[in-house]
Length: 174
Image (cartoon, rainbow, N blue to C red; front, side):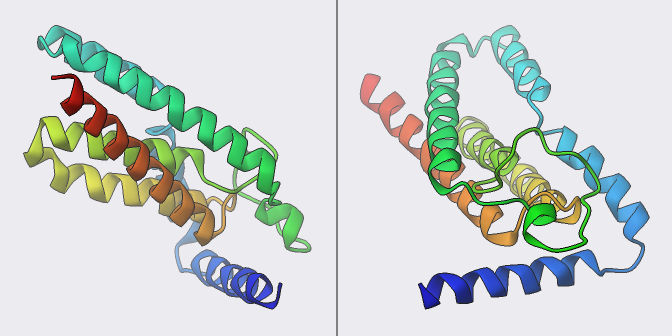
């Protein structure tokens, strides 16, 4: 239990350091925009673009990966029931109101990393644009005050594993 408490204390210290950066209002506005790119509608648009570009065969793989990722994300959140920063840190208010109660793992980050892995496998040159985007999605969630850094690390790991697993099944089906 001391290890978990030490990790939690480091998480809070890192979170508060990130939140104290200068120009917070502009950073918060940019973070809102970046965070919204991972809300979900973009993924539907990407599916439509893939379909129009004759990549229809990969859409079931994307849908299966999202279904598994969302299930694992939901089960993990309900299992750990980690409070979000406003509930864990006295007198702290987040910039936005989160969509659910618990913070671990970050679903926005998980979905962004899963899409990064999967789209990069199909279009390798996109990797260098998608990886920074996924990382910025995670960082934006900390800046907005709705996640701790370890929530982001867990979300990035979950999304990456789900994306790689989906790709491995896709290769088996071919």
